Length: 329
Image 1: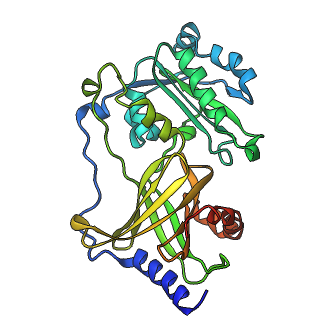
Image 2: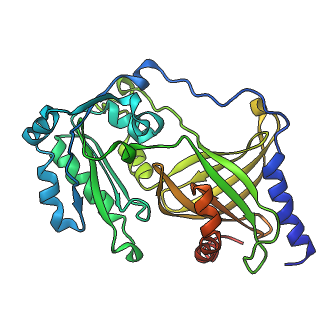
Image 3: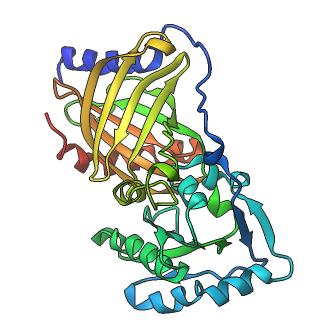
């Protein structure tokens, strides 16, 4: 990379650090009463760990979601009862809110172990909890790549019953992010930008507006969310500096923004690819490889805790390099 290329990468990071003119009002989201309607959830005192390594293991897992079994879990002495908004996943995430609205035919599954298996499955508006549990587990297992053959999937919830401890339902509203400019050989070429990534939650239509679908979430949207599709704000010291769209097919688009918070305007776009490593506080830890219109590369690391980032940054950079071969430019 020549001097111009290095300068381009550095200028982009400067833009990410301070493109907003003023802090302005905090980001808030308003929800209609139906969006935060209380949903009763029950956590047995000793919930079973329901894990399947392949499709052949599903019958044993799904049997725990039969109506009579669920009723027995709910009736156990010492079972804890929650309203949906008390548990972060069911309040902060779009999938969690849809789950809270859905009827009994609902279930969610996640990769196991969660810190290195970025797999997820969800079934909503189903005929019954057992078939929903089978569908969620199948979706989760179907996402495994050849490099994730040692990953399993765990049933986290079916209907009102939570089959995992409270920490399994964490869902951080905002997580750490780091933007690292790279040279033509994909080596760090300037100071990084330390940012916050916050999910751009957009309430969906209420059930009354989506026909018989109690959850209010269409199947295509549910599947995209289960595959990790998200819209994020990247926030610097002076407010939002970029929007990041992560698509279910692995495509990514970063839109750099300028202007005051109430009048942000796009000034630059980068295209690329993303992949996830696992879950941290309920959110995917992600590597995002991007190039601008001149082909200059930028790496985003999102969702890693600061101590892990400091220890693993060299590895994450190395593992992100194959992604840049798939990016335009």
